[in-house]
Image 1 (cartoon, rainbow over the protein chains, first blue to last red):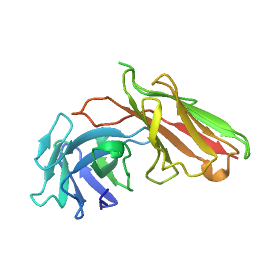
Image 2 (image 1 turned 60 degrees about the vertical axis):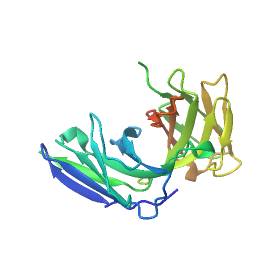
Image 3 (image 1 turned 135 degrees about the horizontal axis):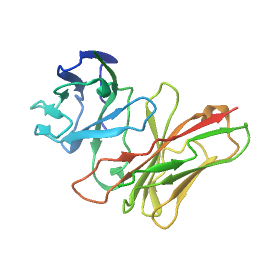
Image 4 (image 1 turned 90 degrees about the vertical axis):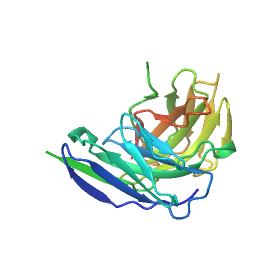
Length: 113
Length: 115
């Protein structure tokens, strides 16, 4: 699976949009981009995933560049409860690879009042 | 509905003892995963079950680690002759068996401390 690069930490004011970048320059055509987050002392929580088109759900939006070498997770109106470590993961969804998630160090997002 | 549950939530054991960690996945989820997270580190994949079989156990760090799943439901991760470096939070996740859904649902984890 392709490697991802994320900033170690970011801050965001409550109520503002949080934009979390991720580089995945070695991504291949059949690899999906996944985002999870982990609030302190909890298990990771799925947020969103996409292949090439931008995606939106009730939690966030995922913007993937046309060349697919980077993506941005957008939390449109960050709250204090969004403070967490955010993981960007690139993965192939087929066969025996339909399983493991490779979690890097992620980005520690701190939302301040 | 009920999420993934794990027990115990905390386990303190002496070096050299064996421990068993339990995972109850969400009902109907056929895929089950074990990960571990050492202090300040990201998650490390251990093993993946599809039903009762484990097509990917490549993440198990040594032969002291084993896991089984019975009845396509509950899974047990066993660590024999525990070492201090085994101290970590052990997380279990399950996934629904739908082609359009690949998100994994994580349990709260078991914090293992080897003294």
